[in-house]
Amino acid sequence: MNPYILTALLFGLGLGTTITFASSHWLLAWMGLEMNTLAIIPLMAQHHHPRAVEATTKYFLTQATAAAMLLFASATNAWLTGQWEIQQMTHPLPVTLITLALALKIGLAPVHSWLPEVLQGLDFTTGLILSTWQKLAPFALLLQIQPANSIILVVLGLASTLIGGWGGLNQTQLRKVLAYSSIAHLGWMILVLQFSPSLTLLTLLTYFVMTLSAFLVFKLNKSTNLNMLATSWAKAPAITALTPLILLSLGGLPPLTGFMPKWLILQELTKQDLAPTATIAAMSALLSLFFYLRLSYAMTLTMSPNTLAGTAPWRLQPSQFVLPLAVGTTTTLLLLPLTPAAVALLVL
Image (cartoon, rainbow, N blue to C red; front, side, top):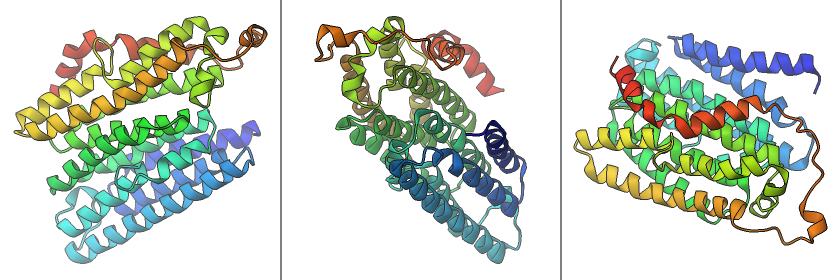
């Protein structure tokens, strides 16, 4: 893609998110979300592959539906209450509609079906933008409206953690596994949103770092499915040794960074007398952990069924920057000791 066009599109992505962040009026927030959607569509379709075009079309239709729902709900709110302020949502009907519209935008269960299909048709770089940056603006709106109807958030959160775990069990395509991983993590964030918004923000940031590391590793190895992971030891032995730790951090195992948000969320849910919810969420984390272990096993404990001549590929210079991968991997593995500092910041 032409670098000028790429710069303009990335600027559009940033501007759309910033407009939504800064807005207090529903029309301005909707405009920011639309800018976000329109800026990423050329990035998704840039390879002119039928799968990419199909993924782009599905994404566009889904986001257009969610945006129409959002506009309808905010107009309904203006009709019922007489104002367009985001933080003055009082009527339960528009609040519920907007919560569902934003759930569709970010891919929460049970309106998640588009996310694995869309992610499967994209390259890793665009998939990374879709899994991280595109979640920011809807989350900013969810944090602002603070839905009073707590049951809907708990139901969305539990459904997402369970479906995110179950859906990934039988997958062999890495991008679909990462999509279901994304759904499960979003479920954890939504569960605790109404009780501790700052904890949701911390979980979102740790999810961003861990997802960045996972996407960059698979991009470096040029792996798109489970079988291709078996050849990664010959391409990059050091990163192959660290990748299982990145995946287990995504699964939430101590003593890795991914344990911190899950631990704090379970603690918060228990404080709110939601022990059954916390138990179901913790059990659903085991489902996710299984498919991360499956990827780790395929990567480190199996060998590719090739001849010896074919197992060691040419050691060409990597075409991607390795600094983001190095920083991302370090933070994915080593931030757990900073939990007391994170908790102190949450209290502030």
